[in-house]
Image (spheres, one colour):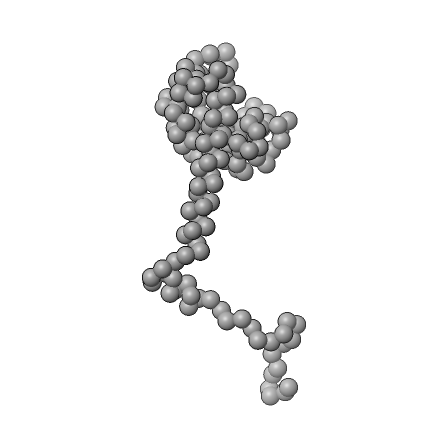
Length: 147
């Protein structure tokens, strides 16, 4: 892919908030998420307006050959026009912001789903809860009638 100006390679490591800029993150920390998957990056790119893309699941970045993180190969013209960007960095920021929005929305829906169950599922979950112990912590249950 080197030297091909019609294609742009987007690695998932560009959006990993756990890594530093020196280690390979290319977007600001507020536009990155921890451990992004290739599917998440592809969905974020699609929501940013990029339509011409190809996924390469088993690809590893040349600086990180041990991790098979995957990459997106997108059309440069399509990426620049759909995101109204001038260069690759702006395209990456646009994808990163969409990725961050998607991650925060999924966290909100997960919180709502776990905190409030109704009907049969809520009753089943309520039955599974254990009653709090009445013994002070550190005390064991007495055996054979001893007090």
